[in-house]
View 1 (cartoon, helix red, strand yellow):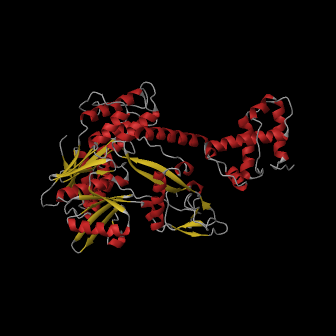
View 2 (spheres, rainbow over the protein chains, first blue to last red):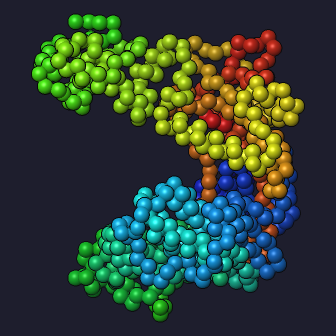
View 3 (tube, helix red, strand yellow):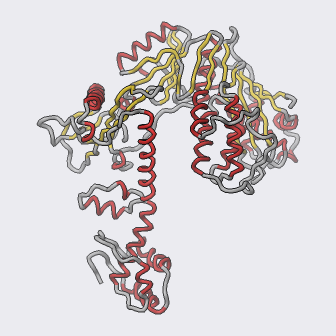
Length: 316
Length: 285
């Protein structure tokens, strides 16, 4: 690829970008599958011809299926969904005829490693949750539920399986949902994020869960729901840790976007619903309540003062 | 005392033997007592031909005096069982290599080979339910079919075209890795046959780290990356194109010195004894 004038991005090793004169091409490599995009169709065609000369390859034209994900390129933007995959899954686990339900998880459901009824088939459970994890590629809405269920991979009970089936029921009613990336105006898209937490959500360890999602303009590009590594002694601390996780992703995304030609000139706003976490990030006064927080979490503070991120309050 | 299979340190064995006669000793005790001997190298175990006596039998006959051979067999038996549960014991591998035997797959790990064959059985069932075509499991089966011969020819041509290997004599002290044809029917979504695909793979499991390979990796990207690019392309109104490189693995340059045997069905006339020095990677390495 280097021979074709591409530069390998230091942020992401599978990303190659070509910037020569007025040629601007972006390429992603997934083993033997490649995605190629750029502003000028002629440059793309030229590059394909060059590639053809050196490798045996097939040109699959406009992106429509990639890694089992359906892509639809329309005038208004690009849509991503995995509805065929959902159909396959419902069939595979014998849930084609299940009754659709409006939410992926019962509100306030607290599952524990213990007290979950009879043991359930581990292999089947792991397969189902594994498939759901893959489905999260285009479905941020089930991310939290799926990450909850994947905590019981090693010892699933009947109650856990019921919760997994509920995710499938939710999917069966919403199988056509996916991500939509709309066409934007002339302004470069602005990156912003939302961060939240679930304090002491895990009943077995009292560990909190971090979550965030990043929006580029009005397109959701990155999200996460993850158990924090240690117990948070206050909700403020849990939120501060969640903000830390978001900050780390934010710094990486900003570099990635700069490589892709949409560098962010202003600080990226991370919206959070905890005033106290924002206060902790902004000043050093609250020593008594924060002195036990590991030093690396103050990365948030550092990036805040470096002007890479800003924090803003959003009511729940 | 020195026997063909084992060197006994009599002083270390003696107290154990005397206590075995009086009270019954559990197999674990015996193992624990002697394990340090194995590991410290005082008791060296040579190639073992046929361990036969199970340990339980020795226990039941606790009244009888236990012969050295019994104890030895029992220990080796147990040692082998424990080792085998994890992996093929090194000494067994060595023995098998010395005796010019191929390591049978079923010996690699008991549970591992079990699940592998189980998985492939399931897979075969699933595949045959999707497509009516049967997939041959060996070259002997495939060589009678025109479709499969054509598929192999196409794969062979691709290998030749990319300059994957050059024929040469095997240098002294080097091993050639075996190759194997793998067959797969590619189906269209509606279940009809799309194409017949034959792939030449190297029996990479015969390789040793540090000698035959250092690092293996395939470039996979984060989905965030793919989504970011789609979002940007959509925002700007660009088209996203998709390409598929055929024989992707064959495009990686190989830095290590690796030799493979010539593929069945494509052995060069007059060069039957030669091997292929790989210049680029093959599947299975």
